[in-house]
Length: 496
Image 1 (tube, rainbow, N blue to C red):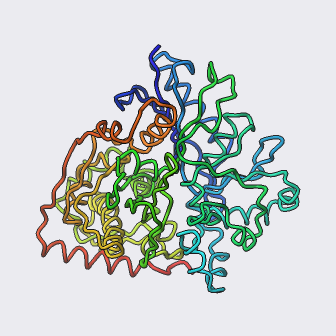
Image 2 (spheres, one colour):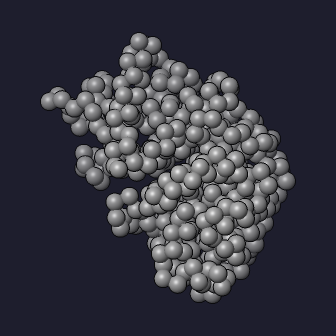
């Protein structure tokens, strides 16, 4: 019987399941979007039960497409939207509140209070993170403070907190296993990346009882076996990593200095920095990349909140395209951006600015501006934001960028990838399989269970698709960079 690895890729706007064979080829894939809930401006929520039901549905669909069942699965790997926070009842397994999504800004005031207490550097040294509403810690505190009876129930040990990986494992094992991996734990602002343990001082600061927390495991080991009727047999759950760390692994950026950018809902640039945490001087995040075979790797990360989501907004908000795939064709109708610059800081600015009060801005509109110019400026904004992060990453590490490996949905856009190479002045490399997030989760699960034997074996599975090289004149580039920087300054501190 041929065996496969299934990757459950639980993202911000959709749940997906991908099935990989031994050559790293995708044999089947299914995807299902789920509801985005916006209770107030700046608030973003998901229904945890819908996350689960959509994930189960796509797993079933992916298997049925190629006529297999759980007996054909060697292992399952999980990768997930990070920081998104779920608190549920340990007995019933029912969430006590909607999942508070990583994009949610409701705890901005609490974060300001922590900064005013002079805790920025203290928290950065422990966690590698900046103080921001992005991370899970303040979201957990908000749920415990605002859901009636939640804090008392938490103190009695009745509640469990988890990021989406923990929630999926809990559901897959029917509440038998409450676990996360080091990469997801490092995104909570509750985890000490030096000791690789939950930090009691941070828990005390945010008034979070340790009893709600999951056990922290490595990124590649057998955590438990599925305990549902959904799979025909007990399948090992054996790999787990936050989506961006999984993509770094899937891109085989396993040596220090290698960099990837995932163009998803947001954009996430990670540089492998090796076996020690590297604390940024320029507002980048230090994160655990993964832990495999007892060896921990770290990464420097720049998080951009709005990447591919700007294309969704062109579709759903403005209605100037009917599908996301149309944006490249529309943008190609004009030779340039028509002096239009678009800063898509719909939910504040991430790295390297970290301005939670910034809001979206379009500047340079004239009578001659068309929807094609807006589409082109929107795509260019993704590349400019990436450029800003990589500029400070190079400054921080002193490592010159020789290539950028790219993946994620928007990396299929050739216009965007060419513009990215132009503004960076370096080579952009797109692999043959751009589903590197799911691939990373599959690789981690496969390594833990002997499906693949080594990193060298996995590295041979990585194949080049397209190489984009810089071709823009330096004079034109300098003008565009200057105008972009001006637009960014104008978008800052708008929503106070």
